[in-house]
Length: 119
Image (cartoon, rainbow, N blue to C red; front, side, top):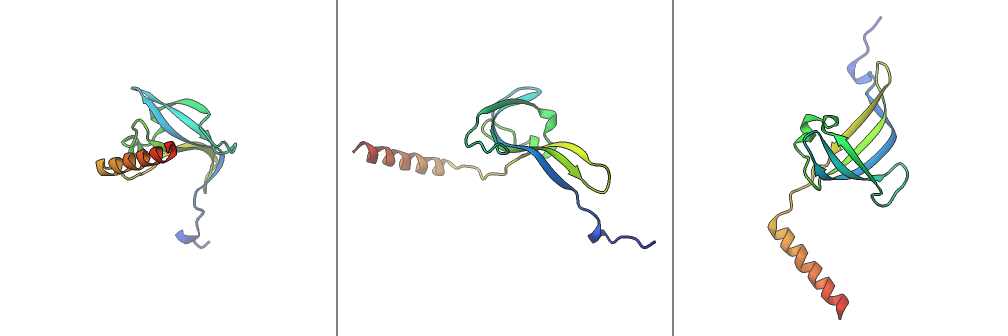
């Protein structure tokens, strides 16, 4: 029987059952609290809160956890060559750092908008 070339092997796929986007509001020794937007339910604002164990986060993403960090949380079925597995996957976004100059420019813009509305 011929071997299947690597390019034709089934790649793992994730079928999402539930998906949230959230941000960290508090960090403790073993878990963190997050505010969540239910993307599966079509929510437009964060209306849920969860305490998530830090062990749910990969070692690479654990370094990104800070108050205000934004992440995506997916619970679903992972399909690959073997058995179907139910998984929970949390991935933190890689966002560029905000510089002091960016913050100053944003504050000046917000102040000018506020002034325009008051006139």
